Length: 346
Length: 292
Image (tube, rainbow over all chains, first blue to last red; front, side, top):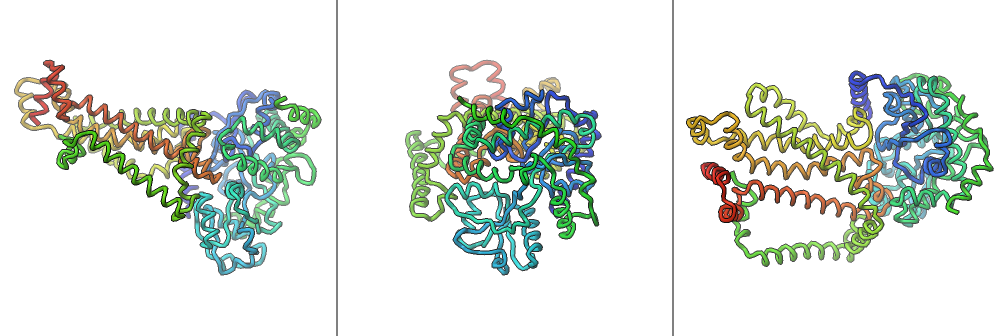
């Protein structure tokens, strides 16, 4: 209900914005690319920091203007031309396409589900043990996480009570430790602070749930047609930054400390934020960075259709996935990047 | 038209109390609140994750301040607050002036003003970003829309409450419309307008922070979010403390401006001016004020 209301509001807003503005298309020259990601500058998305610091964006003739999306719908800002390229989660992209947005997925860079279902490590609970219990949700949209996990395990999602706890890790921790809830469903970023504060958590979501297009780059078809060289340059710089961060964690964290000092006010949180984002950014199966996993996308789409989250009866993900830029995004010398990141600060 | 707070203070005898006693009472109250906070933390009545001890909060505040983190983000938030306040307050005042002159305009515009006021600004915040893009602008507009209404309603109320007899006197003396506005209506309305401005400046701060919660790269609202997500509660409280102090300072500045500009509404200021800087213009305004 909330989502539909929000979608309606956004549709009206987009219509108004489209009527009231000159047609400045999403197409950017290679001077500035407006890039929207869901969080402000952070070590969690280190490629942006690293590629800025090591000059990879500049090498491509690109200046990145970061638009921190927060809870705003990234897909809407790409669709209305505010952002040239954005990072968005698979379900959000699918819902936007379901609502009629014209978007293209060009690159996957976070290949493990950012959502999880966590319990206290000492509780020894499995998903099956949660039947009849209570699951806390960070936001109401995390109900989809619970539904999908229960469906995958053949359990009835209505066999558990759910309660929205909000985004405060303090409340989440207190709720878990007091036994108010037996597990919490949310994004792994919601749990970083708890982990760094010494609260041992374990993600009990099944492996089948973890394969997920959690963060993908989306553009409009017009941008892809008119500005593909710049978008490819952006992706290439991003891939270099990703590799640099995987290759040399210490120097990557040093870049993060310098760029976003407030994120490192508690050193343990900064380190935990880096560490938690390593595995999701590794290339799948050692292939190129950014390869879009069409099979995973199709699985997620089918799950959302089955859960009633999409109105479409069926969807073919090949209709909105375009991998033509991935090869070019990976055309660079890895040894050179190693030298760059190893030499940082020296 | 008198300041209700000042009236309450006079009635309760607070303003007649000697200032050292008042300072001591305030300090004791503050110390009592602090003591309850310390005891609550030490005794574990409230989890430190929810309410960290004051010493930890102060330590975090010092860390953030000494590293320059607070100052960097403070400037961004203050800019949004001031810009939003100036736009919102000016807009509210101008519409109130026009509405006080023209009843037709008032009847047409008023429903939209009320509609704007009753619309939850938190709900339209994401839409402002879609309409206006990112950066400071949507936060400034959000702050402006939130602080607009108190100035509008107070200004209009003040401007509409012109003393009929004084107005008749001005008319009988051949005063022009602008003279009646600047010499009679506006001075009479200023105490009420300032009450609205004091409310508005606090609301502008809230508006800017709400905007930063939605989307920001810099600002104190962003810092609170970051530290909350990191479970660095003491740092989040330190930023909150900073915001509280800023709110108090902004309110205090408006209070000072109120005392300075609407001097005829405060006995001490009035006496001070009549004794030391009595001019023909001031005397005229005082007479008008007394007539009310």
